[in-house]
Length: 179
Length: 196
Image (cartoon, rainbow over all chains, first blue to last red; front, side, top):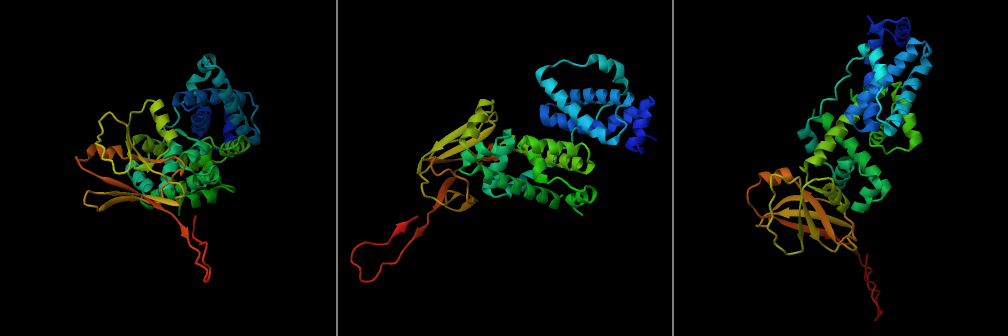
């Protein structure tokens, strides 16, 4: 019932205190919040903490009727993500009291994406030009900056960026072509 | 229909995959990053596209860490790998030198450093030959720092661990450009030979 419901209708159901509607809100927002957490916190467990915290704050606001206007919802969730990441970086305090109150409606968010076929990717990387392969390996090994990569390989920072973009485009095409 | 076509059909202003890749690598300026995130929180199509970018990024990270690729690397990379606990087996070569080498099961990366003066080289290839001189592999137009005094490359640890005892010759082939100006008839002194 709730899975097919529009965001606006879902918000109204949450405001009326329907727990299944809250669960659907979690299902829709959780994966997106988790990606934000992975990007900024570099830890799956920290990203999971972020999901819980932001969903709790969002449910609070929805229950209180503060997010009835659609234009406010995404900025609210993103803003809460940003604030929470800042707080998590300065403190590891958990929001246990909120979890106690709302924990029942939280549901596990989707698992990490299925890994790509490593052997196929290795073949595609092997087909890149030498400097493209070097830039890709150095970039993704430990997120080496374009400046460092360029300095090590005798390539300008701007050219490293061009080479990286070109290589990734070729890799996507190669992976799709050989799928 | 490609994945990009599908995304374009459902998002009025889809984020370029290159921008998403840079976003995931934390390489965007702050203002652009905020704009990307604001869009991602409202756009299912670009959110899906980001997931594809992340899959690729994670797979590339795993591949880079595996040491399975033959690839030219920088010295900073090697140093950083060691500092972060990777076991890097390294061999230094000077031209004409034969170096006994091996790799153990515990080694993560296998690196060779070939001493060479590349001053003035416009293009460098690295060729691998068997003892009979038959080329078995070639890395064309490798990235080099012409002032480094060496070329550092990672041999595939996966390949090396599985390979039988054997010999291999690595040859660095530099391409130097000589732009000759013809001798002007009748002049007895001074030549126009120049090397660039």
